[in-house]
Each structure stands twice: as C-alpha cells, then as structure tokens.
Image (cartoon, rainbow, N blue to C red; front, side, top):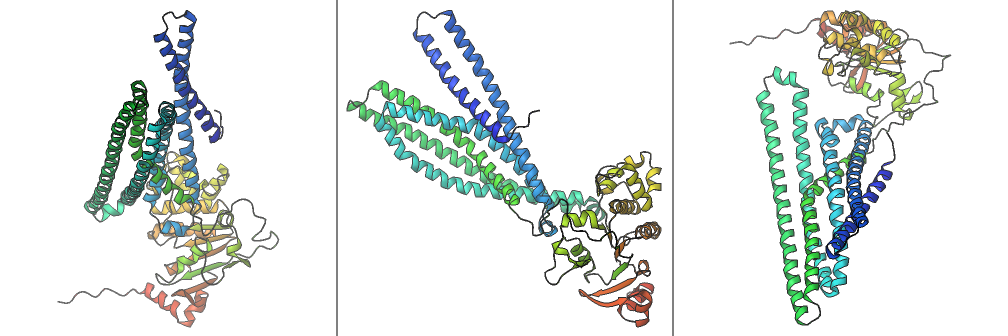
Length: 546
C-alpha cells in the first residue's frame, strides 16, 4: 500500500481529470471526422478505438483517485479532530455534550466528505465546461458574450446572498442533529438510571421533540434550496430568451448569421446545463461547508492546560531521597471541596488563586501528561472500564507492561483470584463500562490499573463509598496493600476508613478547619469529632404525627 501525501494524490487526480476531458474532446473530433469523411482508413478506426478505451481507463482511474483522495481527507480530519478533542482539558468537556462532539466526529465529517467528492466529480466538470464554452462564445459573437458577462455577476451576487442565508440555516440544522444525538447518547449511556425511575416515556418524548425540531429545520432548509434552484433555472431560461432576442437583432442588422446564432445557443445550452448542475449541487455544498466549519471550529480550540507529552528531565523525587510513606486524609461534608483538591492535583483544572506545590515544584510548571502517566495514580468512586478484556483494562495505564506485570498489579489489588475464576480469566470481556462485573470487582480492576504504572502519589477519591460492607472490606484490604511505600491522599466520606491516616484534614467551605491525627482531633472535640458522632449515631427519622 503506497502512502503518498494527500497533495500527491490530489495532483494525480486533477491530471487524470484534465486528461479525461481532453480525450473526450479528441474523441468528439474523431466522430465528427468520421461523419464528414467518406473513406476512413482502418488505422484511423483503430486509433479512435484506442482513444475510446483510453478514455474509459482514465475515467475509471479518475473515479478511483477521487474516492481515495476523499477518504484520505476524511480520515485525516477525523484523526486531527480526535486528537484535538483528547487534548482539551476537563473544563471543555464539562461545558460540552458528548453526543454533540461525537456528531461532529462522525456526521459532520461524513457530510464534508460527500460534498468534497461531489464538488470534484461534478462541480469541477461543470465549471470546466462553463469556462470552455464561454471562450467559444467569445469567438462566435463578442457582443452577445459581453451581454452575458454583464448579466452573470448580478446573478452570481444574488446567488451568493441566498447561499449565505442557506449556510446559516444548514449550520442550525446540523446543530439540531447534534442535540438530538446528545439526547440519545445520554439516555442510552444511562439506561439503567432511566429504567430505574421508569423514565422511558419521558426520554422518548424528549428525543421525539428534538427529532421533530431537526425535521422542521431541515424541511425549511430543503424549501430554501428548492427556491434557490428554481430561481436559478428561471434565470438561466431568461438568459436563453434574451440571447435569442439579442441574436435576432444582430441577424437583422447583418452583424451575425443564423448559423453563428445556433452555435451560440448550443454553447449557451451547455453552459445552462452546467450551471443547472452546479445549482443542484449547491445544497450539498452548503451542508459540506457548514459541516467543515463546525469541525474546524473544534480543531481551533486551544486547551487552557496544554499537554506537551514526551520525556521530561525533571525528576519528582531523586532516587537517593525518597520521602517516607505518608497518608493524608481529607474529610468533610458534601460540597466542602474534597474532590476539587483531587482534580487540582491531577491538573484537570488550574487554581485561580494560590499555588499547589508537589515536592517544592509549582504543579503548573509540570507537564500534565507526564504527571498523570508517571507520578499520580487516581482511583475514584465510580471506576470506568472499557468494553474490552480485563487484561487490556489493567494495561491501559501502561501499554508497555508485560503480562507478568499485569498479574502482579492484579495480585496487589486483590483481583487475581476472582479474575482467574472466570472461564476466560484475564481475557474475559467486561462489557460496556464494566457492566458484567460487580462494583467491588470493578473497583479492584481499577486499583490494579492505577498500580501497574507504580505511581508515587496515590489519590483515592471516596474509592469505597459506593460499595457494600463485604465489598468494601475486600477493596479496603487491596487499598491498604497498595498504600505501602507511596504517598497517599485519601478523600473519604466513611470516616472509619481513614482513622489510621498520618494526618487528617477537615475541610469546610473550601477551607481546612482542623488537622491532626484521629486521636488528636477527637480530643479537641471540634468539627471532626462532630462528624464522627453523626456517623456513629445517626439521627432517627421522626415519624409523621397525625
């Protein structure tokens, strides 16, 4: 498979296109000569036969090259858009809907590719024929050609104004399609929640409303395109009638003969058909331009936290001075800002005020890609697994890891036993988002995924809060084993899991109110002691009095 740059294929395609049109002209001349000449030699017939075969071969080659160039352009756009999306920071995805992003990655690029192929295949041919016939018209009658040249800019300008309105309408239609896709993506992605609350009818109604809006906008767009094409054909027919009237006047003044007028009309008809073909393509071109603009709009978005990637000479911890294992726990009520600290450490966001330092270095000076792939291991409350096997899910954090390293990470996470109990072992497919595994099993696979890259800082964001008692016990054993030799930041809601921490920070309204060990904080009798008391002795619900 030859991997040439896109411009090479495009140049070859254009050369073939020009050759096809030239051969068509030569073949047409050959047929004219055959009709006009009484005696045709056998080698003339052979020559024309070869021309016909050559034309067929070149036409096939042109179509193949057109397809190749179109697919290469679409593939390049998809790759670059996907790269641009993954390079964005988390705040970008907080403000965007996944369904709309996927729509731009698929539907918009498909529309652009279809328009690109049509413009090259039909639009370029029509434009070439129009220009060629205009040159012929000038040689037949400069005066009539001058009249056309005066009228055409007015028509083109009017068409441009209508086209601008249609492009805006097409963009609105594509945005509405993206909204409908987003509704479907959310409903299907959270189907268990939808079914748990019996909200199927509500989601169906919401999706139907968005689809109806999409249908209405597209119908208005179709009406606009139809009006544009109708006006285009009307204008072209008026040009033909005007040509006949002006040509008749020239014949009466003996400034041109009837044969020249017929030749002019035939060439004008060719121009009319070509422009008519272009007007029919206009609707698809409008969709393609709008789709391309939406794709480029995303590609131009610059992430506020750029990922530089690659090797970094800075060492977080010199090998000769490894910090002792310390466990820092952060507790507080919901909304106090606990998970925000984890997000800031991961550089999902950068602090607006103040500085976060890691071993004395401002975290904003560290490459986020290096920080996340080599330094920090992150385990949150709801681990997300990919729809592949367990082996690849664990290896996701370290693609170069060997099978033995995967097994060792699973053993450290207390996951090796249940994984090997499956018929397919580590090759077991976990389903979308790990649907075939229990909550505790998913959490242990997520722990193994975090441990396989041997992180120096382990962040546990309420890693056991969503588990039942038995699953929590097993996962907690895995976490206790994973903490050895690492600096650990534990964000916990269940305070019983952090009593052994070296330092416990109590967070309230985004500020640290207390800090110390479990014993020290209990002796103070402050906010931490109050949280412990509430969890140990929850207030019973007062029954309604009658």
